[in-house]
Image 1 (cartoon, rainbow, N blue to C red):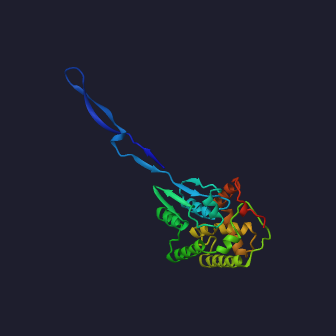
Image 2: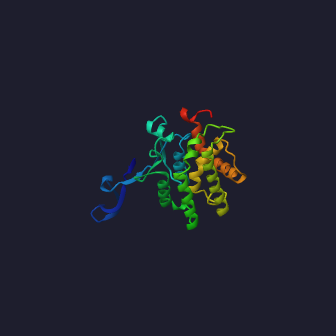
Image 3: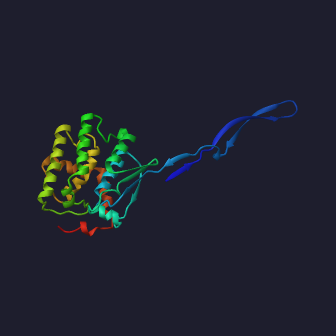
Length: 260
């Protein structure tokens, strides 16, 4: 969507107005030029397509990245009962619907692609660390989250409204959880916290934010450092904003609301 602003331009000119026969006075007048004499200024609205705030982990990642970048955007929702969206939420199809960003006439989809685009357009947000080694680390663990941990995803689907104390995690998912916790501990050791890449929240935190919500929902046992990180992320103002939106959603997906 674009909004066209047509500027009105004024140019000063001087005309002579006769006063009697003996002479004249110079009078300044303003001539207004018609708007269509100039090219219009174009302002594009930014829009982010997402699905359910309660269930869609990829929507959360894309939304966090846009907010972290400082981008003003409109949310466009794909209903949870949309067949493609439902299949995606149930892990029956690849994540191709959400998130999708439209910014200044450019359309970009896939979370890592959105992150790369936002980092280029809004470098001051530091979605990626400035240090080359830290940036490589950030991209590596983000890529691992992007392409891996299928057992954890299927065993612990994101559900912001639910809480299952004492939930029993099956062995395949537990191996994924242990790898994630090892990644977190490695980040704390390398960068000092409180976020994965150090003092600033980055792409890595956006990628693992839905995992923090899963660990809270399913009461996953964590060591002190990882539990503190989970709690810090869940208390972050952006996460709180998202959680409030999730709790306000009326729709439910019964397949993901089973009492385990």
